[in-house]
Amino acid sequence: MSYILRNYGFFRYFCNRFSDIFGKRTELSTIYYQKMLDINTIEKLDKIATPFYYYDMDLFRRTVDTASELAQQHSIMVHYAVKANVERRLLEYISSKGFGADCVSGNEVLHAHECGFPAGKIVYAGVGKSDKEIYNALKLGIEAFNCESLQEIYVINEMAHVHGLKANVSVRINPDIDAHTHKYVTTGLYENKFGISQHEFDKLIDILKKSEHINFIGLHFHIGSQITRVDEVFALECRRVNEIVAYFERNGLTVSNINLGGGLGVDYDDPDENPIADFGTWFRTISENIVRRDDQKVHVEPGRSLVAQCGTLMSRVLFVKSGETKNFLIMDAGMNDLIRPALYGAYHKIENLSASQRTFYPTHQAYDIVGPVCESSDVWGAGRLLPLSVRGDLMAIRSTGAYGQVMASRYNMKDLAPSVFSDSLEDAAEAVDYFTLSSRA
Ligand SMILES: Cc1ncc(COP(=O)(O)O)c(C=O)c1O
Image (cartoon, rainbow, N blue to C red; front, side, top):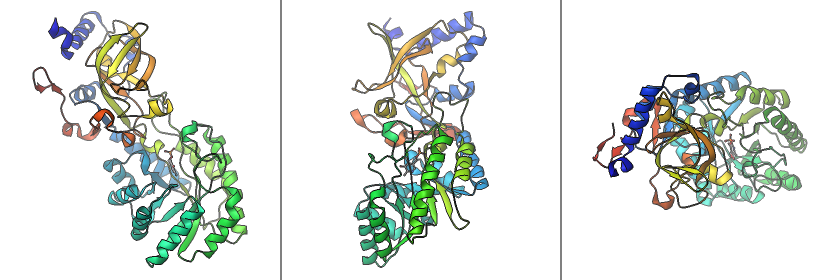
């Protein structure tokens, strides 16, 4: 009996045999086959130590290539927002496509540069740049500091002066636009800390003209993330940007670069139906609504839309527990691996990959799917309907390529979940069976 209770294999063997004997592939069963992976790949993934971040490199490249082609058609320059995912392999591919990098810390600037982004294609935003970060970026000769306060412009001007350098500066403007997204990822309203708002424009223009050690190159905007009302919200942003650009130019400053930020949303509900974000609508909306001269460059800074859908957090069911009022699936991945559900109440689709290999599902159940961390907010999803799930099942937490691994922590002294790439599964660490002390392969 103790063998049965402790062992992953028994439950899954039982489920698989049950399914072999009684099951046949029915329409119902195919509904629960998740579409992202074939059965051979699932079998390989099942042998890898969990939790881990799985990157579908084919989807990733197709996403970047799509964005690249469409951007060229609309003469829009793309800077990848490095904060979304700093994985070296992803950055190397993005930089190889000629994209620039949008960074928000000194270390992101240095990392982007190491991953192939030329200094002249790196922009650096952020409300709180330290002196050390400013110095390092100045020395590197980045494309632009996206300055977020008047005082920051003074400091950069002074630092450039002292070191005999000249700094390229764009100014981040807070346009006071509602992006109609979650309040924690809204950034372009006056109540948010980002950018410089209208009441300081005249002072700002005066400072820019007087600062001899900076080279003013343009204006920067970013109003929020996971924007799904794409045409409506970005058209509004463009109209406001047109007014602000015109104001600066009327007051004697040439705005060569117009940077509209990121924010394009992805489909968290149905990542298989919409694996690639709607770059076409985004770029078309910008082209149709932004007023620009031939000598003005338009930039965007997508993060999430380039990397979210190619990433999946893979986890294993540790225990199934029947509570007083509900069933819990307790997974080995927790909020330390992916904090978005706990932080924003974010939804991620969750699939039982092991059950998808069974041809017959005895029943379906509603589960509260939770992590192992000692916090009540460590919940992946409440009341999720899944095929009967058992200890050891491999679970996929979908659309986790953006703002996932980058926000992971070692809270509760958990290990960090490593990256596993679809084109080099053989490099991944094998799962160990701690009863036999052998590989689970
Ligand atoms: C300045 C800036 N640019 C770009 C982005 C990327 O946004 P997203 O990942 O929604 O495309 C962010 C994200 O918050 C940002 O702060």
